[in-house]
Amino acid sequence: MKTTLHIEGMSCEHCVKHVTEALEGIAGVSSAKVNLKKKNAVVVHADSVNPDAMKAAVQEAGYETA
Ligand SMILES: [Cu+2]
Image (tube, rainbow, N blue to C red):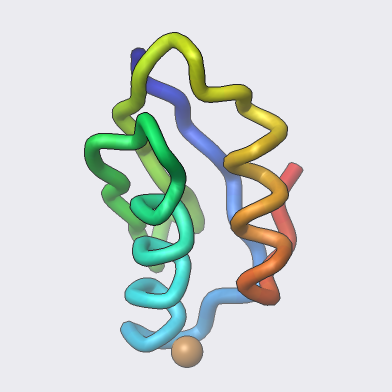
């Protein structure tokens, strides 16, 4: 499955890395491509991964997501 999350609050490559690691740290997520300019993350994951878990991981990392 592929889910695109809108992410607010990223300002540099460090933020991108932070969000990428947060998302890829979730069990069942195979990859997360975070785009600073587009302010989004395209996450490839197993069907079992709840979108709310991905949002929570982004928020715990210190960023906003809707
Ligand atoms: Cu940053």
